[in-house]
Image (cartoon, rainbow, N blue to C red; front, side, top):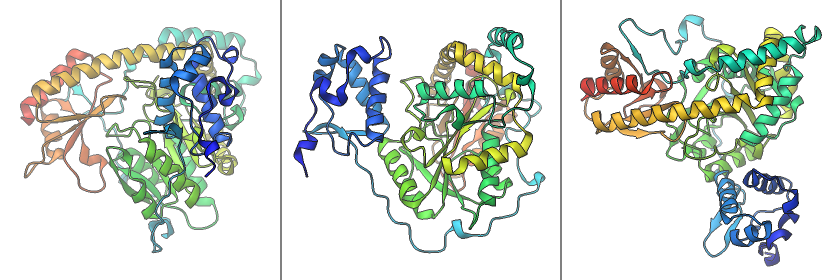
Length: 490
């Protein structure tokens, strides 16, 4: 090995960083982006050492905390690792076990789409007698920024041209695609030009479009690996559109990549930023192994950026797409940040899929409502959307804290998971003989509290649990709901 390649570059010699080129604010993000680009372009090879934090901070004229935080973010992404005696170095690729050469679900004939009546609709209507709905996935609709939306809508109507109101580009209005590309780059680390962003009617439509694209391509239709436990709604949607699904276990570090490789599936639908329903963030080593699987097996990672904007303990881990744009199809929506009724989302597909996704989008409905697109673009460009998210995060954190405190008081035997982010948490219950979380959820419903049993979101059997959404109710009502749960489950 060339030892000179491992020696850390001192201070400003590292990547030719210059303090006068850095922004006055956001120095940590600037430093992360410079290192991330250098790794992606091959200017920093695996094993290359990063400068000591004190040295680089002194040369940049910043606090050491700026560099420490940058190195931590890069470690969270799996791009660098800290090694005893060697400092922080660029991570190398991880090998993925070769899957067994045996018939796999990926080679099975594609099933016919299921009849509409066979697909459960989640969330179901609130049953009669339920006055405290803790269903996960329901945002704080009372927090919708009505005044900001109205101001933006007036500005749009005052300036929109007649051409803006036509059918337009099936990828979405150029103004919204440009605003989304900029926002996703700075908030999620995405690498996408405006022309690579496609506006869709939410993640559900992304799954429909992907299914149509995969079913019309030559060769066998790949099975889709799904997290277990994972979103039942997403699993049902894929099956409805004719794709076979294969469960892959999730543990405390995220999806088990070795198990994913062993399925033979060609596509994996994952929620790496905030796994549903466990709340786990995909660990750095797993991120590297997952992207290695995608490269070596020619697999496709479908990254549902679920709840990424609702992080309470630190900045969200950047999206997978930024590390492997050719292997990751990224999708998200405003459903949890603004409102699901807007039916606005986005997809950034690898180049080899992009044209087919756009064609399927055009065939589906010609595009999303243009006025809503232009209003969202106005909110993104003017900063109103990010100000709204900051306000909502503060509200949700207070609600989360109320639920956690109430669970500790009224359900002391339950283990609380997934509290660092999102709009729900998971209660793992003691596994006693005869414990059935569906029965427990039914008892809660009879007491007027609606929750999801964890078994709804499992394919294989596992420990019992309850999934509680806390976004839609104020703290007092949440405490009341948990108090009732304590009485009926205790």
